Image 1 (cartoon, one colour):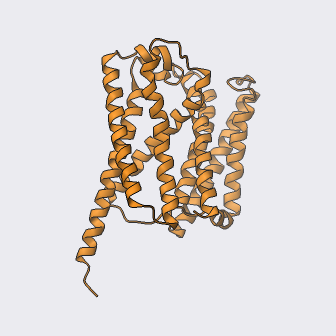
Image 2 (cartoon, helix red, strand yellow):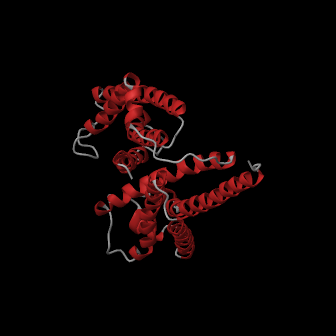
Image 3 (tube, helix red, strand yellow):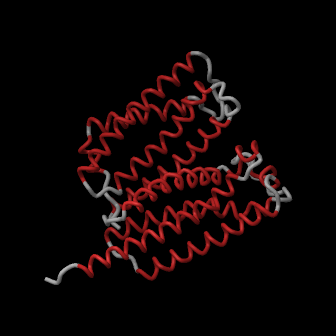
Length: 313
């Protein structure tokens, strides 16, 4: 793997972690006003400012995974405009709320609301940089994937699943990183949550492996036996542990271990007495991995069929 590709790969991982931490924080801002949304004009800009980093992650991802230079330029132009509008508008709303006295310094972080303001300033500055120096930005961000054709249904479904998967995975990775602030090993039901913590790690590891594979395979073919082995192991692991979590969820009651251990990271579950979080953690890896496996087989079958029907020269 070249130095430039490795740096792009590491930048993507760093953005993923930072965006996850921001999204985790923003989600809790949002949940603080979920009862009637009486303070949506105060909480909304806070949540959206945190979510802007996830938008940046997706924008960076598509730039590094789009081999077509014309589409890359168009994508960068649209996203640059999005950063300017989003960052600028949210910055104005945050400052207005600050002037009106709606924000208390130190709320949820030592430097709040300076941290939120910094996010919006960075997004606004990034949008201006992209607009002014589009060619330079395109040159600095390499493509780290191989181009190959996919059936339309694979592209559409894969994109939708990808959005959902990344949102869930980045949120729970951030929750895991924040574990020292909420985890209690002494609760009698702590053991029931261990598979969930494993899945929190596993979801992100799947993403990191996929990105590493794409980046590595662009320059050097990876051993097919290694790829096949990791794919099958991941499928089996996700399926077995996922079914195990769902069975446990049904057997021990709908809020028992949630209310004891995970109310800080699963506030919706705690408030409405539903295990949405565990089911997302269980179903997302299984569905995503099986879809990717079936989609890959479909693409390979289509490619082989095309080779068979090509006339011999």
